Amino acid sequence: MNRPATIADVARLAGWSIATVSRHVNGAGKVSPEAAAAIQRSIEELGYVPSASARGLVSQQTGMIGLVLPAVRDESPVVESNNLVEYDAQTATQIAEVCHSYQNDIIRGAESAAWEIGHAITIAAVRDPEANSRVRDMASRVDGLVVVGDAVEANLLTHLARRVPVVLVDSTRHESIHDYVDSADAVGAGLLAQHLVEEHGVTQLVFVAGTSLTAVERRCFTVLERLGATLLQVSDATASEPEVVAALVQRREDTGRLGLVCSSDELGVRVLRLAEQAGLSVPDDAAITGFDDCRIGRAAKPRLTSVRQAPLDLGALAVEALQRRLSNPQSEPQHYEVPITVVVRESCGAHSTSPPVSA
View 1 (tube, one colour):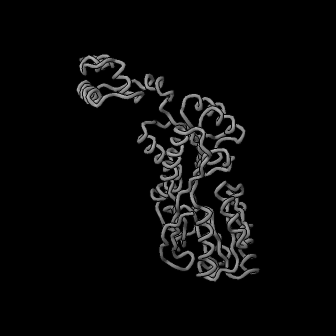
View 2: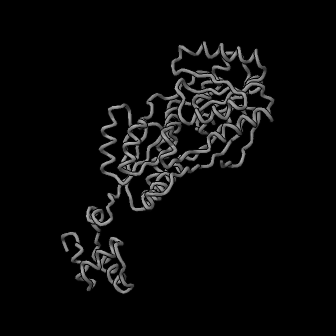
């Protein structure tokens, strides 16, 4: 047969009606075991592939899931101190790729889970508000949306949720009205703080983050603030670094031994260099920890204590949550949480690994 096999060809070879074959292929009704076996043999013999559009007419689904993410910055981490990190240009590029692989792993996890349920993923990276029209268009062509971070404005999310199910991942956007997936990152921050205070005699906790706190950073600081931590925000601009150095010196003079919980390993390595410029010895004067357990933190001297997340699991769990929502549209919104692992290294004065901790 030179042309693709049709459902009529399958019905003719199997000896059953087109309607019976259609019910078997689309799962739209009961088929006897004898009919199912004959139809399946015919499908395999003819190499028949059901039409996606035809299946969509029966199931009222497109077979597509939309994945919306904030665009990742293009800047690579820069570390200038020879005493902290040593790697050539090729390794530096690999490190940058690993540190930016968080979203890539979410995509991989989502694609794997979607494949298991017979769906495909279509992806949009949102760089600016003008992308809202493209997100609306995507919502009209998919069965549901997985939205990572704060890639979509809150009012648009509310509008989209009236049309298709929406699952949020690591977002601040109205968790109470959407299914929501995140990591136990705040638990990790609390465990880091507890380790620094109880095991290493830290007298002042400082949470170090960027100038605009992300959803994850807000959750972590909420936990750390209850433990007495202050907030030190670091600009991406190197011109601000003298101010950061001065702030580190001041905190050291005011409080004794510092414990710096940085919101990323990239920032943690940068703070290692700034601490060096401030005349602080790590880990003797200041214990420094990171987040995400990137290769750059493991290459630092001393190596960074960090929180290891599971972005593959985040992506997969988000798709599974969306599938549950499609199967049961009227159920209450659910919150799903992925466990984390705290990895203790020399930057806080020890070298060991803690077990996974789940919220």
